[in-house]
Length: 156
Image 1 (cartoon, rainbow, N blue to C red):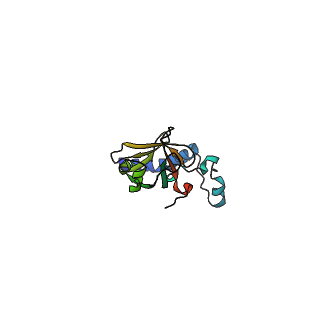
Image 2 (tube, rainbow, N blue to C red; image 1 turned 60 degrees about the vertical axis):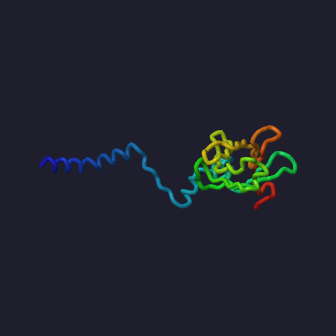
Image 3 (cartoon, one colour; image 1 turned 90 degrees about the vertical axis):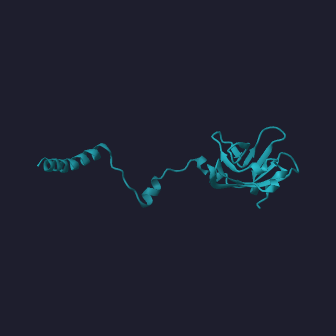
């Protein structure tokens, strides 16, 4: 008998609790069509800039700073690997970097630098951003530059 009374009391209380909850929280409106499009937040001026790993994925050219320097065309890919994302550096990169065969992964560090690491997650190269698609390992004369291949005229 007690169970029946308890169930009856709960059945009566549930609708009252639901009405009280709606009175406390305003109901969310579901908009469709033109109203939904109009209410979407408009992107700010910085939203046009690429961000995150997808902004860096692609073919890049690495070379020492200076005229006539040997170049290394490498690929920064999106698939994840130990230590970041996949980095593909062909043997031709040996002309630019003695440790080319250690290049295994890449990631964008918390400070915004682009880091190229080996399979044990040790940093091999660390580039800081110069411009939209320009990176450099340092400020000295022997620094390495990294630029998008399409920017320097090599796409293959």
